[in-house]
Amino acid sequence: MARRPGAPAAYGEEFSFVSPLVKYLLFFFNMLFWVISMVMVAVGVYARLMKHAEAALACLALDPAILLIVVGVLMFLLTFCGCIGSLRENICLLQTFSLCLTIVFLLQLAAGVLGFVFSDKARGKVSEIINNAIVHYRDDLDLQNLIDFGQKKFSCCGGISYKDWSQNMYFNCSDDNPSRERCSVPYSCCLPTPNQAVINTMCGQGMQALKYSEASDVIYTNGCIDKLVNWIHSNLFLLGGVALGLAIPQLVGILLSQILVNQIKDQIKLQFYNQQHRADPWY
Image (cartoon, rainbow, N blue to C red):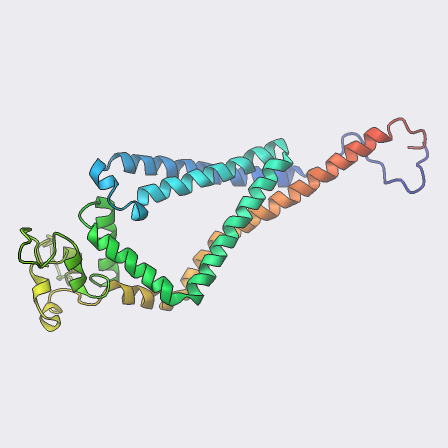
């Protein structure tokens, strides 16, 4: 049968613009992160349930369990849209997935740029977070382990100096403090002892009452804020690689979803065209 001049090329009924490779690649891509999100939520809920009720309210902003749950739930919802949208070829879900992923990427990019431009304010915010963590050191076991790890990793003590530990009610140097840890610092502030078989958790006893020159023989006297800033400056390439590693999956997800959306739209146009010209004798 002759084709009307100017009409688009004819395609068989079995032809589809939707590429199975793109479709299932996007599906399994989202499925992987969907499973990861469920694991994150499960670990976060388990960690949260294992905590004491009074400790749970101590420092929510820094609670790793809450962070895991929130990030896991958001990732679950986002990848759900990607999984179902790609499998069912649903344009609405795919565009929602692509839009949300774009917003997340732009927010991360904006946070990085603002952190670089307003480095002084970012430093002040970090100082505020560290001081708040010092106050709640004994209230939350996860927070305590995180602080101890940081102080040992960066060979530091406190925020600005080791005397910042006086902000904690247990380590406060006031005369009316009945704590046995009065005027002390955590064991993670202590200098490492070679060939030490058992950790001396009381090595920081009374260190805040000593002068810098005397305390420096036993503990780290420099604060963690300066050490953290120096570490960031000396590991910019590493941080850049981590940021790139986070950005690449997001960009791949955005690209695949947009390709699939365009293919689905082309397929809808083809089906509509075939329906309109099915009875056309020139078609």
